[in-house]
Image 1: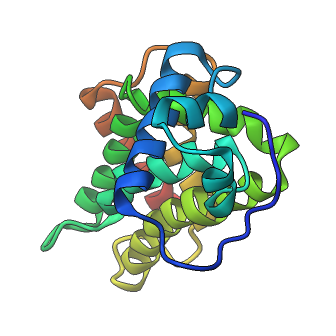
Image 2 (image 1 turned 180 degrees about the horizontal axis):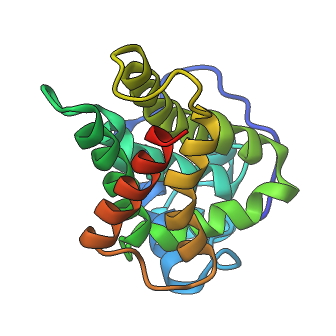
Length: 198
């Protein structure tokens, strides 16, 4: 997914129909042919819009794919109402695992991650809009468990977050089979018990 000209991003708001066509075209191309196939030229051709239209609103093809990903999973970090701390952590890890295991989403995210080192804007967006909010959701739950006395005060929250969210990414990036539901539950229980033992 190559970078391109800087986006102007001014004037009238984007047409939702155009936006939808562009996001859909980018997702289809990336799934069909990987990151090399999802170029701005190819996206423009498939969405039947001009390169100028694309560059007006997005800085690169990877930015388009990332926006589509964020749209599709934006509500997945919301804590279920009335859930216990363990249930909330399990929800967050299970939701992340399901997203990464989805054959229509996981490969797209893997392509965006691969493109991010050569595209600072995508690297920053990936961190700010994808990684950080998901880590924060788990961290907040763990800190609330500390405040309620469910976990000891000296729990290394960031380390626990790493232990909880890393396995789904590890499996995605190395092409391994995703965790199943039972494995997610065992992962959360193992980390939770480790936190309680500190």
